[in-house]
Length: 105
Image (tube, rainbow, N blue to C red):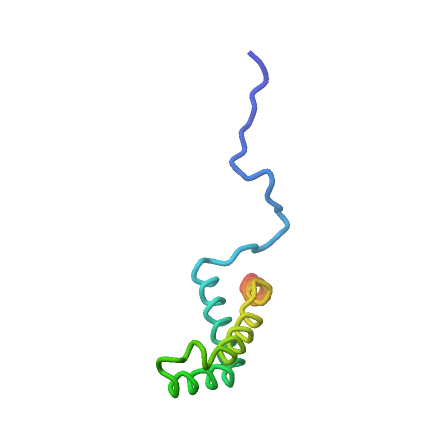
């Protein structure tokens, strides 16, 4: 009848020159855990201050320790942003690409 069309099963939108462009779910979770661990380490002092305050004031902790809670949350929020997580993911991806390049060489 007409010309036969060969159907390609490859993704026409995929960049064939790129190497690796995604992390596994486990690697992403590892980045998230690393982000939290770094934030907890960086904000150790505000966390310690809030914990001490909350031990001293059991019932009135919400009123008495409010400023320490805000300070702790502010510190943690600045260290656990989407941008910080993306930086860790990109670093992990670059390390993974480098390892693959080294294996193929």
